[in-house]
Length: 183
Image 1 (tube, rainbow, N blue to C red):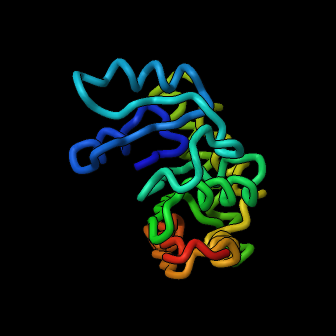
Image 2: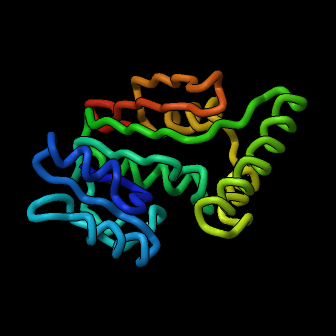
């Protein structure tokens, strides 16, 4: 299993209880240092790297996950290409992320809410109101769950479910790469 944008490794540690091999990848060295502190004995292996150029052989993983990761890549299409490349035929991709409401009024309310709540949490948890302001900012350019689903289908994922979470403010993508590896 490969966990992309692993951060401090929460998903990787959960998966390590079930999977034979778990790798957590993140572009930020400090996040990986924090993940390594949590590890006791055997567990996930952590690698610094970029989702746009994954440092793994083709068809290396049965499962690729990411929590709040695909929304933050600078270029979504190449990241999805890389995910498809490292997945084995029949492999599963799971992604949980914020979603972008299609209704413009609801979207404006949602972004305002995220800005205010993010500022408050930033102050309370980190002493900095700007800590979580990147979330609504990143959603302004994120295409949303429907477009991500379309992009996955175009990349050879033949089984795809998009589950709205929290009334559609979040979305979980569950996709399976075509068993024949076709695109």
